[in-house]
Image (cartoon, rainbow, N blue to C red; front, side):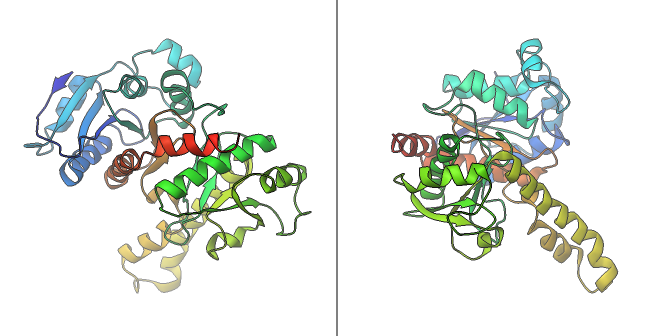
Length: 335
């Protein structure tokens, strides 16, 4: 490990950042990590090719910041087969970051790299909580329009009712520990709020949810995200991923439409803000992989420094709020 600088971190939180992952690596991950170290007092471990990272750090003032470089070899890209790439590049930056979490040298890791590779790395290196078959993806995708947690948004399709109940427990852990909602309301995403509505999957999951100890409020519809009727919305990854990308597509379309409608009446900053309301890419920078026995946060490949710093700050908060322990408790409560 090559030490760049050192300082006392009162929070004693260390975050490993995969600076080789993402569309704008290594410049934006390094910039975001430096920002987080400066603003949040976080100990940052930059995982990547030493020469490249050292050169990138020369563009920043790091005096008084606790920033370290952890050497790695190779990168797992979006086009790689995750499992094959892990076998062929055992010292890739994402894997080395995961190893730091597993060994306890880092409290969390953040990557903007391949989501599939992050899930595989988390599963194979960090490990999963009891009762979890594979990590889930989700979070409050539509802030500040809605704080409701949507889970799952892409990890699993054609789920069994028991899997969806597990999603609900993981989402409840996030809402309870991170969002500080005392008794999160859980809903099944469907085409109507009546008990008999929905496809076969939703109909089979309904009685399982109803018989659980979760605060189940029944079926919810798409607009209920924005009506303060539910805190955790559960669906399989097929539906959730479509919802997330549809919202992002609306954001892009709005950004292209507004200038033609209002000309120069709105500043670029206002247009950017309107677009961000429908784009999870621009909110928070990333979120945790649910169900992992350690903190692994994954962001969008297009995330830039501000978003990456936000993801690192969320990692710090998740550690302080003992999010992993919260997930473990909620899952145990289902038994």
